[in-house]
Length: 142
Image (tube, rainbow, N blue to C red; front, side, top):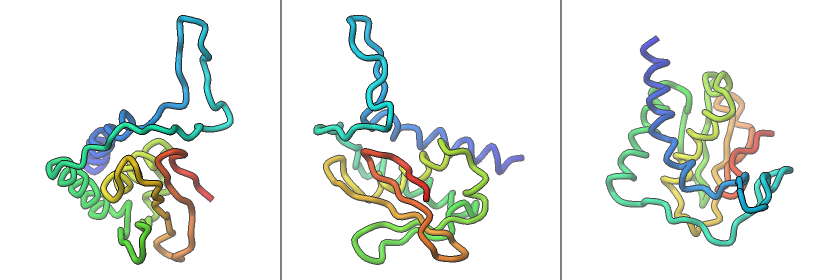
């Protein structure tokens, strides 16, 4: 039970990424569209800056370490230019929003708001690709 509470706390810490991402739905009282990009988020030309301060980077690093300790992530590495996250069986039990939040922390740790980077997701047992995360489109699972 305490592990579930810890995972919930980790999720709350990762929510900050939500507020730094462009939003795909907007409400408007003045006749604007209620839903933009119904088929998926539309890339935005300008992006709000990610907080890359040493304090925020340390928080991200702490969250990633907790995810590794909980065996949600098995390994986080950058073998070339793209970060790669190998996930364990516990990752598959999370709901989609939690998966996206946790992987977005890895993205925010490795990239700036102006990068068009990607985090690759791999199955920790088979080492096969299971998806990716980009800032503009979020988490895409194969």
